[in-house]
Length: 123
Length: 123
Length: 123
Image (cartoon, rainbow over all chains, first blue to last red; front, side, top):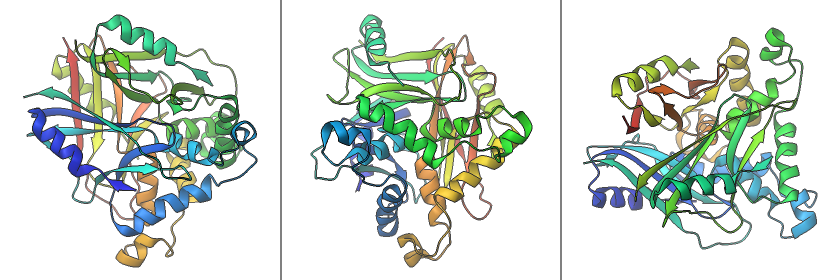
């Protein structure tokens, strides 16, 4: 899991948008984007509970066709969703003190991923 | 489950928006919209895992009042969410090769649903 | 759980925006925003199924560090997500008759929360 808040905040600051929203989206079907209190405990808890609820298994339909062992990764990512939008006010992200924007790769092997950040609004 | 990517892509192309986002939203409380690798295996796996995690049951509070057998459909749809936003760049959807926009009706009987597609951005 | 639809509809009406989207976002990492058929049964069912899938437990990593008993609240809120966007047409929210915007606090104790509502679009 990665805390992408600083990167997003930097893009917002450079955009010149004072009020509006920023949309953070991952390209790919096993990545997820959302908000969380980004601390070591939850960084471990979220992937663990996802693996408990949607566990790896050779019995998914996806596995019968692809045999790549990541059907559960797709299901986890679809459930969390590929993107989040966060408000912008006074040119800054509107988040709680304990609320960060995370990117989580649910795949079973390391992936290089691209996040697309879209800033919309007025000066 | 339905792959609505071609319909959304077509609306984006006709909109004249080159950079921005497109928001896809289902009207109704048992439908869900999101992204997935749209292939036959996962088309079967996603509804199955949702039914496993949030199974049909006569014991939900919703059933006591309505007796329409779809409390779990509401819970599944609320968990997945009614909408997704996808970035637009160069007038095209920014999605991975294996990442499509799906609409999933979670209800226990066929429904006719309307999706509302909103394109926002600049030329 | 709270039905925030009337508040959001009022902000949209006052904004002068006729077509676009409204984004509703909760500040804080144990709150969730989404859509649901807002009736007493589901108001009880949603928190119950979340507690069944992601139950309170002292064994989460978050608890080892913080001991505040709400690791599951964070996981539930992250899974539902902190925000939803709803289309606007003719100056009104585009929702189904049985589809409302809810705010759910997943924390184990009462919290005072701020929702940020951003209206974007054209007259």
